[in-house]
Amino acid sequence: MNFSRINKHTVLSSGLHDADIRPPALMNEFRRLSVRDAAAFFPIELREAVPCPGCGIDAPQPAFEKDAFTWVQCAECRSVYVSPRPSAALLDDFYAKSEASRFRKGQFADGSAAQRRHHQLRNNALWMAQLAEAQGLPPQSDYADFRTYIPALFEEVAALDFFGRLYSIEPQFGNNDSVAHVTSLHTAPPLDAISAFEKLEHQHAPGAFLGTLHERLKPGGLLFVTTRTSSGFDLQLLWDRAPYIFAPEHLNLLSIEGIERTLQRSGFELIELSTPGQLDVELVLQACSADPSIVLPPFVSELLARRDRFAHADFQAFLQKHRLSSHVRVAARKV
Image (tube, rainbow, N blue to C red):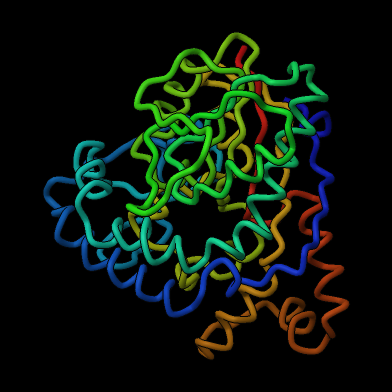
């Protein structure tokens, strides 16, 4: 695939800060619960080695260990992933029963919902509607989001008046959440468009997950995905020191090439693969402030420590433009 033919020049700036979408107290508690519950739900002896979830090649190289989990890096596509990992059944049990999962769907979702709506959900809804129209999807097409946990997404989608019938597949709403004109489904008819935001990184088998979404789309239907990539600036610098990387939340940190390959292997044609992340520089600064033992390369240290916020903003825009941010968004068509 010729990367130059895929949209990669997206540059966004909405004044987003990490604390807006991951309030520190809530994020710290979610991470604590996740690490604790993972130790109880995923005994080491029940974990299984897997090939690269990006390209499918079984050529792992050591990456890092953290919280009794091992991340490896694919020698072929450079994706980073947990192996050995919990089975799909154990992961389903964790997401259904763990306190960490309940916290995410409840307090964490509620505590970040307003800022996520302003900085993420609104942008995602506009991106989907504009791209769907540009790709010839007719107005009032069917749209579904997979495992929605912040239902305000549908209010943003409905406000644009492009999509018609709205569905949430296997919704993860809190007990007090409800959305008018949204149908909750565990199975769905063939749909015109499906989104799966921040889901790929914690699937046991991303290819199988994408295959399931492929089956639920009409021929030519559109898939919208966001995830985190190991190719991004902050993860390349921080590696195991990235405080927001933990299992099972981040079983898969696919490289840009790995994301492309797994989508193609799952029957999709890429329309857009861009990295409009706004937080890489801020996340590195935060991590270094919290952990003075982190040593950055001299150039990066000079940029971050001795240049002002305008230089930081320009550098973040450079990362976005050249697909070097760790936040990825993907649009693909069912072949």
